[in-house]
Image (cartoon, rainbow, N blue to C red; front, top):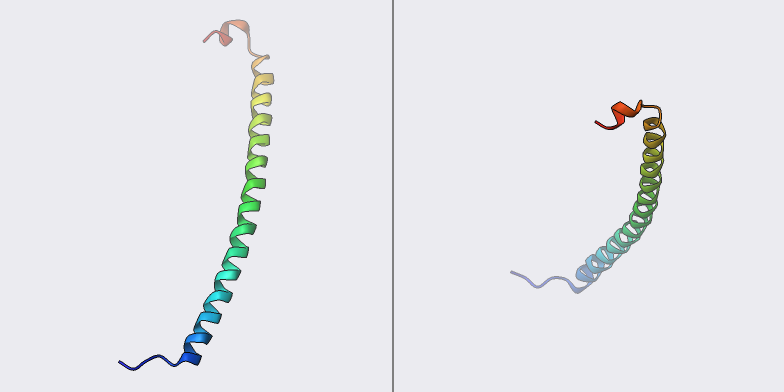
Length: 66
């Protein structure tokens, strides 16, 4: 097996470093979007809970006990 060409190894390392840099940037973006989405999920969950509570007030008292 022959030794790798130093120039080719350098080019491969540069290309790999650039690809990893892009991946790190995308991961950071996904993390921020996920945090925002989770905050929205919590708000929607609270709104649905409030809506269910309001609807329960319309039920007759006998039905609420079951």
